[in-house]
Image (cartoon, rainbow, N blue to C red; front, side, top):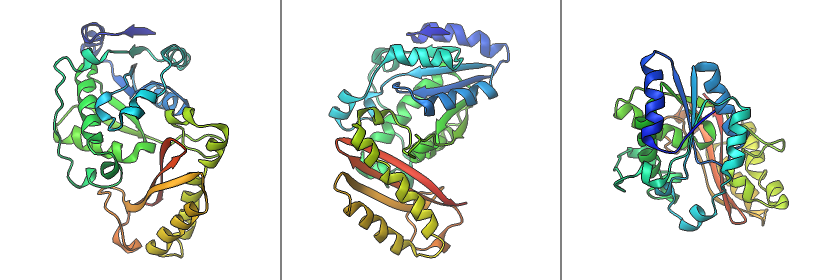
Length: 281
């Protein structure tokens, strides 16, 4: 596996590959890799000729400095996992390489960024779009792979790519879960054994929401979810929304959309987790 730390070196390596007509698959990450990330590498491996993974903890998407400081980092372990997964290239840039002039771009994502994560993490998606655009410019991939766990982020990246007419196909990939149902996340590393068990409440609740969607109203289900979390002193609900899969606007009735997803965010001790489940589409 080739390893690069500078923009000039990775461009010098990838540009001849691109010119030769080979397809480049790209998986952008912030490191602390887990099976969810590796599943993206495997998808890229199946679809493309050369697989590139980036590891960069992007400061511009953290609205909480403490969260940035505590974000797990283990480059040696990440490189080992990528080698096992048959990744071809890893790009591990410094902040100076990604942001040489320290400028942020300003994006307008309309209604997509004014709900859920956008409400509770102001500026987060502008930071995500800034770094993804920059990485796309550096790597120049044909395909880029993103997990469905960060569903709102996926739609934001879709919109940015479309609005800017970037020649990259965005490939969504299924959520990978631990044996107990907890959606895999780098932040799970910060959970204690007890907190990890309590965190399954997110997934268990989403499963019950999908079952109840067959006979309960949207309002009744929202009340049910709030009750579920009030009963658990270890997990604090931040939001639960039933929304249209493409606009992310909250629904008042099931008849309001043919494509519905339930999204949830909660605090388990000091760790904030998100999850989602498609109700029907």
